[in-house]
Length: 257
Image (spheres, rainbow, N blue to C red):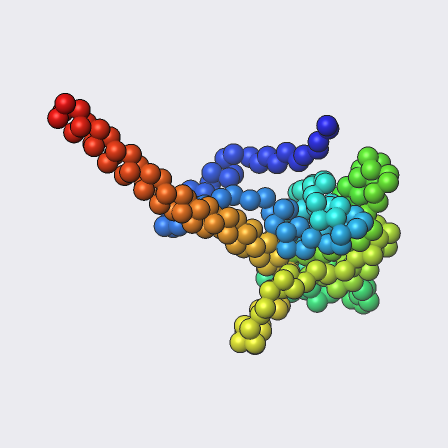
């Protein structure tokens, strides 16, 4: 029987650098997971049809295509929200923080009036267009390889996706309905936490929350296995003690003879 799987690889030096930094802080690492899988774990999508999750991070964009909640294809595009921000930073001659605020406030709705705004808007649109082309090429590759399983919906997450009008532009470019994901949907968020303004960081928290779900899921079998092991130890210990007493009795009986 033929089976398909996904092979995940990363640059070892980059991973080791992250691991060493965490361990130097006094923390230990139980497991390492792929961010694309954590996104799918958080937002598995419909039980029928093919879904794509597009997570636009700071320096990269992860595209996860799944069918009925099972990952089928993953691509990481080496471009993210910070690349767009830096292009505005250079165009306007401002700092990164100001350029980030300008990017979010400006969005893709248009309406620039001054030469300065026109320059910033042009740079913004050019960089977004480059990222969308990479995403569209990913969809084209998938469609060619899997003509009977076209992507029917797109979920958008990541801090870099915080750009007004992006869902509309993506919907038109990909010809697929695109909406923002809700990373808090699987959780019960307390009113106190809501009042703290955590909702404004929901898009950035998608991948970390997916990792948290994975850790919680993985810990349950671990606890069950530990309980099963303890339960198995008790009869084994009783059997061992019984065998030792029987051996001692036979030895004493042989000595008397």
